[in-house]
Amino acid sequence: MRYIRLVPIPHGSDADADADPHDADWSTRHSVLSTARRTAALVNVLAAGPADAVGGPAPEAVAEVLRAYGEKEPFDLTARDVEGMREAAALLRDVFAAESADAAAHVLNRLLGAHTGRLRLSSHRGGSPWHPHVDRADDAPWPEWFLASSCLALAVLVWDRQRPPGRTCASGSCRNVFIAQGSGPERRYCSRRCATRERVAAHRRRVDG
Image 1 (cartoon, one colour):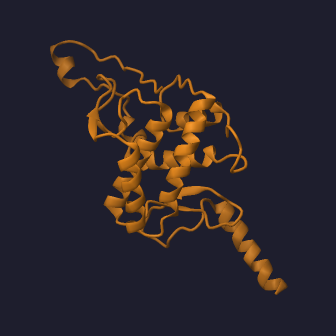
Image 2 (cartoon, rainbow, N blue to C red):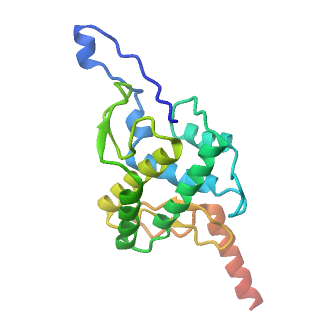
Image 3 (cartoon, one colour):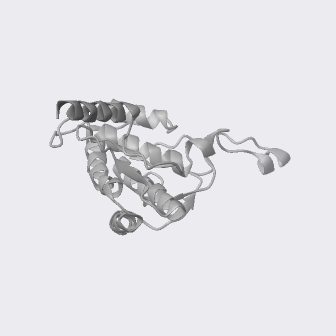
């Protein structure tokens, strides 16, 4: 189950009115873009090993990504949680594979309809700023939280940008997904490493051909 650390709120006539019940950088760590990037990072780490591998990555590998994106410890992730998150990641890959905003919206509507609850606002009993949730409870299991929060963030990106929120790396030897952003040329690769490897390979094919 998800663990929500409650942050103490000072008491007093003035303090109660002005209390900030969250870390100073909460909004940055949990912005739509940061949540979408966390989704891509989790999809990638959950794909570690052969596609048909049983169990996938160790819980600590998943916890490392959660930690990097500001989730509070302890995580108490189990092998069963990871397997459920792997199933959610497989569903989310269809969003990253979408070639148009229409296709991404279609996939997200299907996932939102089949796997999430009603939209609501939560402050986790005063432990964080008010923010939207579409999982069925604040203590939803990890797989449900991952799929629901990811769908919500990706849906907002489609709404805001009117284009697919991310891509699958164009390198034939890489399965990573990434969040597309910016107004420049369309990004095709998940990293400079993949882009460089493909450019070198293309150059060698031209020279050899």
